[in-house]
Length: 121
Length: 110
Image (cartoon, rainbow over all chains, first blue to last red):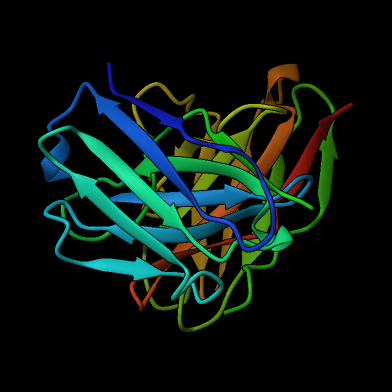
């Protein structure tokens, strides 16, 4: 069974940093692009970032560009999101999700259960 | 880039059919046949229901169907059931490359 399991969420102060992880199982990790999608409390889904299967290509939403870094360790079947300079607007449930192919995410066919990030003073 | 436009809410009675619209631009929905739809129940992760405008993943009921005309995509649910009550989000691939979502539609089964 294909599974994604996020971890690393928590409560932190504005300006802080956090690294999210997403452990994958049930598929050949390196052959699929992956994404992070977030959902603020009571709000809709917002795409955050995507990374190709090799990790050589990365893409970011304008709202996080320069502050967040997506990466992956294919030897550990794990996706990461390093988040710096956090603000209250980054408060959300963060989901990792799998694309259908290696290079570009056209849709997201498997989602993790999400991890909650709360930025508050 | 602005989110795709969806109605905030739709409703229908059991057994009826409903359609949710999703309006984008010539840079996303109008340009690519990569529209997808997601169902999200409260407190749960989204679930892919339709991809590439009309395709259903394995295990998704054939009561769910998708279509597209110009810059607008649609999700139709026929034979409404109580378990269909959820939030529905459309999404489109855009040239960045990235993915853009709609604001979401709350479906109420009366």
